[in-house]
Length: 83
Picture 1 (tube, rainbow, N blue to C red):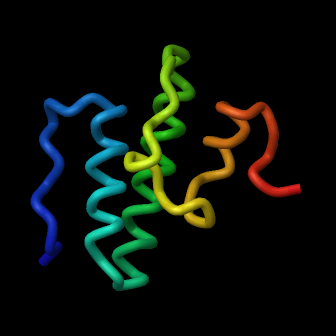
Picture 2: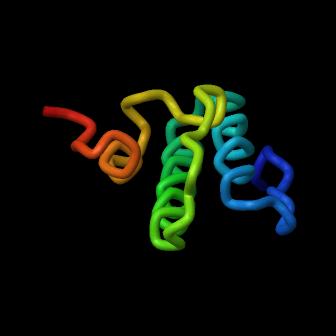
């Protein structure tokens, strides 16, 4: 059983990122963090593909730097996340 309540279907993808980041911060289990990070990356890719993602998520709506998907940095900063 997953320890977090499901994210409502009515959430926008931007709101979903915040909910996923909160879930990530609420667990220390590596397997759960990996699952959340994968879902976060899928949501980031969906936002990028939609072509109308206009505001970078607030820091509290992001995962820790090492867990962020590379596509996020490419989209917002125009460069890969690491040199």
